[in-house]
Length: 416
Image (cartoon, rainbow, N blue to C red):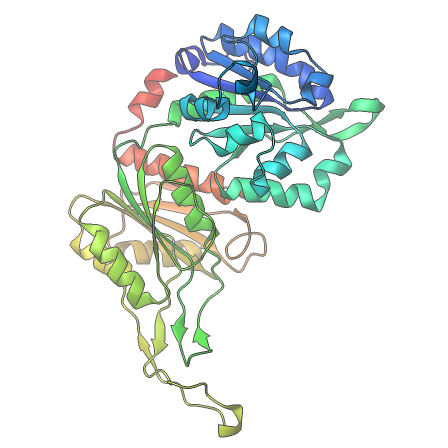
């Protein structure tokens, strides 16, 4: 779909968009992007780094945009606004970084704020869309890919580069995505942006640890990445989020965080919050068994192999399904065989509204990776399979289905 034909008018009209331009050869394309956004009715505030101004002039953006281009973090020193980054970050409906160089990607991932653009990114709770552009070798470098993965886990939206002609006559992956793709991604983000506003959401994440002694535990391989993605996307789309987690990973600001370790602690935390929420997503991998007796001192190898008797843990999902009153309950089924059969059985037995099942024996999906493929089963009988996508993208699909159940998709349809 071309930018001229994309259904962006109603979505972008009146929205405040910070168009941040970093220093790469693709910076000149941001000029045309600025014009497209303004023509669609958006209120565009350009932010240019010093490096960007080596390729394009601030005056060009000032002439096309809704406000003069911003270039200085310390504009108060010359009589201007003293803290422009907070004003920009707090007032934006969307921040777009086009092009996003390896430098700004790295600074954002590391939390460095040494110029107006990087400070604005840290001073916002608005959705952030980045369109990387750089040479193939840079894009494929492990450090860049790790930074991209970090930003994705935090909820940043990435419009990946395309293959094509690069600076210096080279050809390969790293060319800025087409403006039609970037505009459409911005339109979709803003259309969805607040569809979960007013919802109170509880998400669980991570794998529980059931103590054997003060040193050892019974656990599983869950990293919490899926749960964190679900929580991050919910917060982006306007929900009030409580995250019950066993991991210490960084989270989106504004969430209520409850740290737990064991299945019993998670059970207590979830049940104490359940009556006050509208949606529960049980993404955590809760241990099914725990040692019946926990040793007070470290078990010694010299004493021989201990006999560890297990007992079942609390079945949190089943208890939620039995006592829910109007809440939407989303469960996860991590399986290694007969995926659809086991997921459907679990959904019925535990009265789950939406079951997300995945094959954790796959090396590119499931535990400890940033990608996943899933089978979504709805209690209404609907069934959906996703290809291999990022966990952030899968979180978006999950919330799309929850929004449909709650009748919150009409606003998006009207806007489009």
